[in-house]
Image 1 (cartoon, helix red, strand yellow):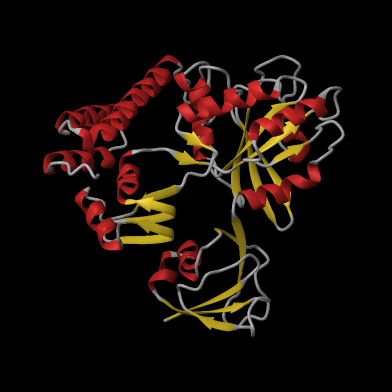
Image 2: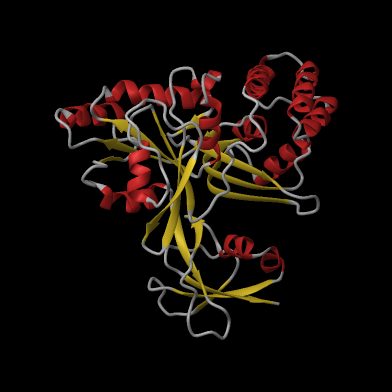
Length: 391
């Protein structure tokens, strides 16, 4: 059942979406909630909005309590490379040692707990691409409630493209993993892929609605989605729907900020006594829902599996481009989500490319002949070489 909000509530939500000021957003969220009629159809929405209000208040209190000097360390780190991956774990799990072993980052490695107080970035090479690893301060019970630097760490996880969850095999692995997952779930960060994943990316005025369904719509149509979004004043956006999605779930996505992050578990310290037994406990607890790589930061055991596992878990592919008339293609690939099309590639290259697109040529071993002339809807695969021709 969709909520069928009155026009004044929809107008107020448009104001909520438009503002970036936390204090103003809080005021508008409270006003929006007062305009929502109370009945069974709006119960879930009210819970979601109340949680947003609570979380926003908590973030504002945390910023006020821990007001850093302007010259202090950056919390937000600009993304580099093929993907940004956050290293998340409890204290002394080996995040710093792993980052030092995989990248050229300047890392402080200490026997003392909670040494890392702010994010540390590093670049990891894998074949012809690079992953940006970000070591985040340690999680603990209460991180999602603002304890220590918990909100900062969870913010890093939310902004990243994927996660490495560090587990110390010399300690209870089940307790560590359950604590990490609970804190992330409280912050609405999921590592288990939901049945339906809906991403709504707001665009500038005049770009219109673009809806891509990579799955199946349940009891609704494209027209229903367009009408729903336009009712909420979402008229310029890029909407990607994966899995099996109902109209109610799409409506939830307009209000809810739950995110899914693909994750890999790194079980560290496999070289220590008793680690094998703890690894078995960890695998039994996780039920193979997440990839697990057993490593030792001391002797680099398991490191050879990490790059390929990250690449597969992130569900991405490399697409190489070739200028019309050139014999050689660029050795620096574009990184796209699996299932992306020529249109997605053109959009990533430059906005003019998608607006003036004419056709493309694709070179690939999977095709019966190369190059093959294709349109904007052609689905790409890892390793394809593409030449885009404009009007």
